Length: 217
Image 1 (cartoon, helix red, strand yellow):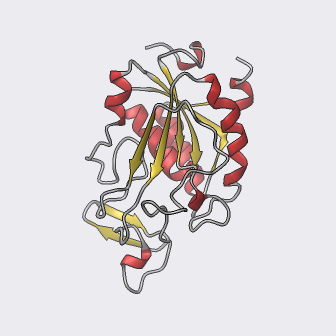
Image 2: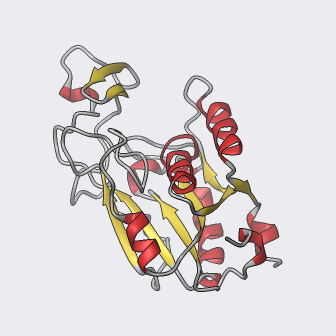
Image 3: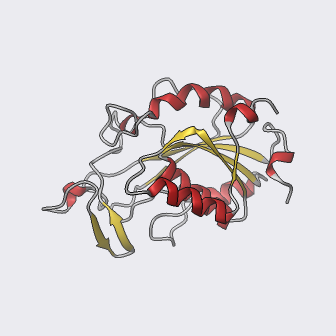
């Protein structure tokens, strides 16, 4: 498999995956990521350089098991044990069909080939665009990429230390060349989660490249 940086971004084997750039993760949203809106112009500059663009979108039913409101007496950012392990509890966010679940209005990705919605199972969270939080249920994204002959993915979006990092780790586990673009992401950084996520990605072989460097290729 070629090194990802040896391929031009518009090579049909490359794809840009834009993760969860949705209103509820933007300042003012129910689960806002600081500076989340700042990445939108950069993504809009990057995306036209890729032939293949894929969007991942959080898409929760009401009463989702990952919501603190579904667990009486619990508060957002508490943890509970669910059937698949420890789950961080979140404020209600990205409810199916809601304004909060919509993509940021300024995001310009008209040539995106696929929107993959995750977190739809009311009993299982899904940070990753590849595998749900039970670590057993695939979303189908890996199969789609392989069917399209894509072997190299670049990741941007929100939040770096959760949905983006989990997606990057699962992309590597599935055998894809994986590049994280840190300046086109923002993190929650809950109790050191950003440092842990960056270390895990580095160990897994995820590459890191700044958007400004990619746009000079």
